[in-house]
Every structure is written in structure tokens, then in C-alpha cells.
Image (cartoon, rainbow, N blue to C red; front, side, top):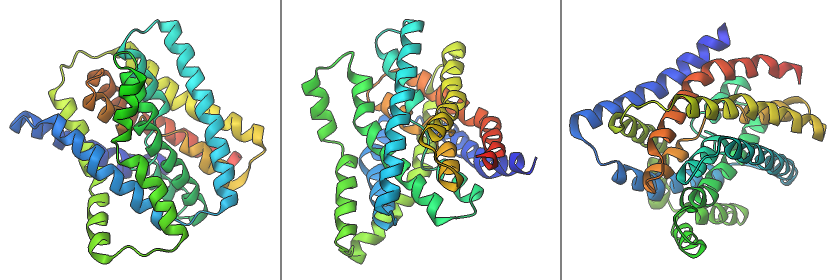
Length: 306
């Protein structure tokens, strides 16, 4: 019961308030969703990725283990999503939207506070979550863009689109500067942190604006299937891979927890930016965030058994 109340008050309620503010802002001022989307993609997200990676402390051993786990997990959940898409016989943009809603999860503004709460700010488990966040920030800006454009664009056009996304350049830049201990000048470092700190609020407000402006013809079946694959099958697959690799203790617990979080806001930002099933994507994020109050609580309860 303590976990339930804590997660509800410290994750679900703050997220919901920000989303509701965004929806109210749209209803009142008819905000431009495309402008907000571009701010997220080209300003806030790159700054967040750079700051978090530049300031983190990751050992080579931990990095290798976590990346191998993530490779197996991402492959397994992608195959599962593809099988489901074929069974449901989705067409056009819905295929990419469903893929993104399952394989991209909220590893930053939901998973990081959750990790801090469950493991009491442990640096080791936080470094694990930071690696997952790094990969989950890279993939929406590459594979995610391909997923929402594959049905209507050529490979050449998609690669050109990806090449103009700044986030993919922030990852190697942050690692290189950190490796050679290159200090960030204060006049640059200060605005970088201001922008990075604004990512969560801007992303959640963007989701609220999208929810406030969409036609609420709820795609009940598709959304709940997406939530089931993300919130139930996600941690189950993570647990199976942890057992397969023989991992245990805090590392195993942190990895399984990282697989249990709801659909990423990136799926909404992609859907809005490239006009690909934005209503379904927004509903999938919103419902998975609400339902995670119950599913994540169960995962946390089971973690000590690993």
C-alpha cells in the first residue's frame, strides 16, 4: 500500500497535472502543437541527452552488460510487436504508431525518479538507468522516425530527416567531451541546464495540448492492446532475459524495473511531428501512464525476489 500511494502521489499525480494544464491551455488559447513539437525535438531533448550523459559516471563493464541486455530486450519486444501487428493486420501509419507505442518507453522523466525512489538514490542502479535512457533517446530519433515515415517516404528521404535531428549528435559529443575531461564553459553550461530542466514540463504540456485538441473517439481496443504489450509483456520479457543472462541483485532489479515503465512521450512527439496517428499515440501514452500506477507497483513488489 505504501508503494502504491508513493507512486501515485509522486509520479502519476504530477504527470497528470502537467498534462491537464496542457489540455486546458489548448482549450483556452489553441496553442500550435507543431511549434511545441519542434521545440521538444530540436531544443529540449538534445539538451537533456547531452547534460545527462556528460555528467554521468559509467564504467565500461556496466556499460557492456547493460547494452547487451538492452539489445536482447529491444530485439525480443520488437519481434513481439511485429507479430502482433501482423495478427491484427494493421495498415499504413498504424503499423509504425503501434511499434513506437510498444518499443519506446518513458526511461527519463518517469523511470529516473522511479529508480531514485525504489533504490534510494543508489549511484549504481542510477547509472544503469542512465544507459537505458541513452538508448531510448537515440532510438526514437532514428528507428522511430523510420517507423512513422516508412509507409510514405523513401529510405533516402528518411535518412535525410534523421540526419537533421540534433539528438543523434549529442550522444557521441557528450561521451567524447567527458572522456577527455573537456569542461563546458559556464556561459554555455548554464543555459544547457536551464533547457534540459525544461524538457519534462515541455514534453508533458505538449502531450496535454495534443490530448486537448484531438477528437475523443477512443480507440479502446488498439490502445489497451498497446498498453498490455508495454506494461505487462515488457517487464515479463525483461525478467526472462535477466534470468537467461544469470543476472541478479541490484543490476537485475534495475533492468527489470526499467522495462516496466509506460509508453514514451517520444511516440506522441513523433506522431505529431510527422502527422502519423497522433490520436492513437496520445491515448496510448495517457492510458499507459495511468495504468502503470498498478502494474509498476506490482513489479516493485516482486523485485526483492530477484
